[in-house]
Amino acid sequence: MTLKEFLEEWNNSSETILVHTSGSTGKPKPMLVEKRRMEASARITCQFLGLKEGDTALLCMPLDYIAGKMMVVRSLVWSLHLMCLEPSSHPFGASKHPECNVPIDFAAMVPIQVWNTLQVPEERERLMQVRHLIIGGGAINNELAEALKDFPNAVWSTYGMTETLSHIALRRLNGPERSDWYTPFEGVEVSLNEEGCLVINAPTVHDGLLVTNDIAELSPVNSHLSPNQFRILGRKDNVICSGGIKIQIEEVERLLHPHLQVPFMITKAPDQRLGEQVVLLIESHDIPAVQDICRQVLPKYWQPRQYLSVDHIPLTETGKPARAEAEQLAKLYQ
Image: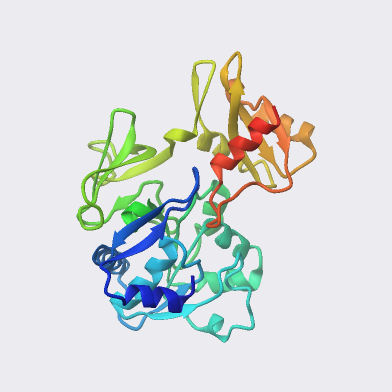
């Protein structure tokens, strides 16, 4: 979708607009959302970040998904100056764009865009000058968080989904306010259901309670944390039940990230004896070396029973791990 097409849809007489989920756990799904709720979401974010009229916002993500659409809506609602770059894995790599040299007050990117930008000194320097950088659309691993911790300006990890019209909570990734805990926006309440999944009550952007698939932890009472804060442990559908032991995929990946220097992903496959088994997809042919690392780093019952060398780790269009596709790959190799 082009900016012109989105603006035509935004300015037509309909009270709703069509968006699609990202498809990280299956096929993208279409859904209609109310424009007034998108406007409300935009105001909440701009207020939280302290943006003001005339500030420069960078759009460098596709307009087919909610993250890109919301950058435009925030610019319209808050009278921001919107700069548009062709979506790419290196947003600041297009030196032919003179707007790359304009100071940027607000930008939104997915983790892979940020990571790629950090690998090029000139692009990294431009990223460091962004006054407010929000990162969403996927988990931020330890390596990326470590690379951002000393940035001079505010860097935020977002929590949200298409159903919440982008994010409903932020956590700081750098500076003295750096934290693993998300702070919900004003008017947003969170709780846990019996399975330990996060439940969101955000009446401004969503009707009724929204039960997520994210296994979370709420801030303990009488701790130094503020009430209503939370942290994400992983997704309910990313649990591997192997021999009666529940293994959270994201936790296995978190332990491996500092030790594996090439793209990889943990998934699962059926196992006749254990029920399910841990499978590692990796862009490497040196499987014995990878096995040695896993034996050293992972608890015994978390270690993969299959190691699959692949040309490319499956990702969605927005750069998230394509979990459903990875699981199908693992089944094919059985």
